[in-house]
Length: 303
Image (cartoon, rainbow, N blue to C red; front, side):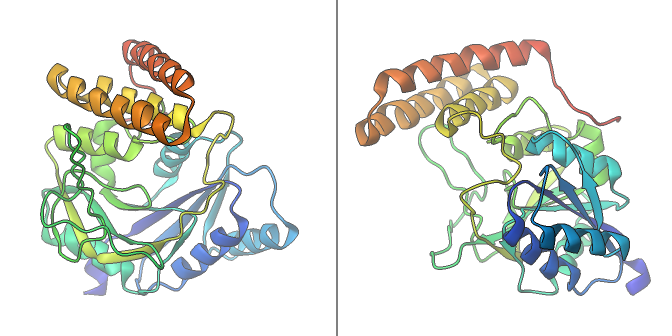
């Protein structure tokens, strides 16, 4: 049985999260699986001496592959990891997760072995001290009319509409088929996981939610391969516009953007003010996303 298990690549993109990164790597090193590699795509120009020494030791002893890249950007980091990976299955986890279950990889792998039509899978995501985000149906459904049912904390496995970036698995062949992650999703890269999900499904693959492959997401407030030179809410609106213009029909775009305006401009202004600034960012996001759409996809993978 062990000989039939595929080689797996685990990719962690990291930036400015020394403490949580070390804890995440420690969990990954102790997983119960016979053949896998850990790739740390490191865009941090410097670490504390202790963390630097640990990463260097792990790299030299082949516990992981430490790949340093100069420019922060989550989608680019993911594509670097894909290019360097050796596994036929690729699992992405964030640099601020805890993985108590040593069978984590086996659960992810078993789903792909049992379902050859599946190209991507979302694992279960829990947050310490918070109730799970559960649904009865439509896991990963983003909705167009104000109804969102991500449900990545649900306690059952089923077909899904999308994956979540902190715990997602792919066939490498499916990622190469669609050209990897679209590097037009910049800064926080909000919606990059939804975008890859839509393109995977459009290419004919199924997406599944696997509740047995679970982890805790700690949601660290800083770092995480983010370029922090832009206000987060402006970035969210820009990437929401990108997702709509890159992937949705005209009718779906209208509903999606109407919800975006109601949530990110009107509702947010009622709570925190700055209506004019939010409205300006909303329309700036549209014009930038339109330019990005017309310029075409930007990826660093050779397919």
